[in-house]
Length: 191
Image (tube, rainbow, N blue to C red):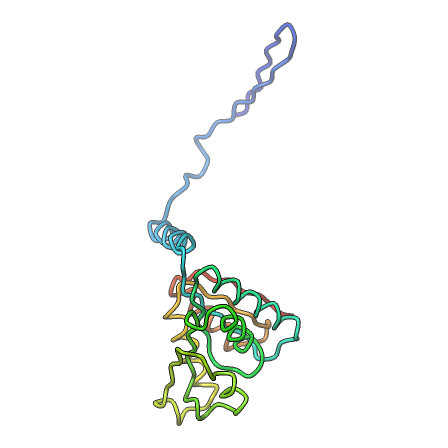
């Protein structure tokens, strides 16, 4: 029942609407959701985070420049960048950006070993002080080793930034994994 009350003052007219609230749904707070939001807020407020930057290898040069600039700025703010190796695309841009600012704030987790990387990737990794190799994945296909590597990168970070297309199944799975593990996630679709 809605009741409208009119009261007239000498200089103005005021209307009040009374709406019963008996039948409105009660807001219920799921404790798990509240805890997740509190954890995400705490992560965002941290002065220095471990931020994973993962994404597509096939990027336009303008996207690579944007990622490089982002990685540089994040490291200058005291964050550590965690990514994988790559001669082009997201990983390469993240490595270049972090190396410009502070190489000690860069961690590169390879899907396999440095020796299994193409020579241009090996060249890019010269001077990176913190590289994790996985000789135990030497017999895996690069696609399978990359899926495992993405999970390892996500496990090691507080926050994930992912650059992908809508058709990238591997990266969509990585984002789902990050969501399941309650990471703060930012996704940029490139198509």
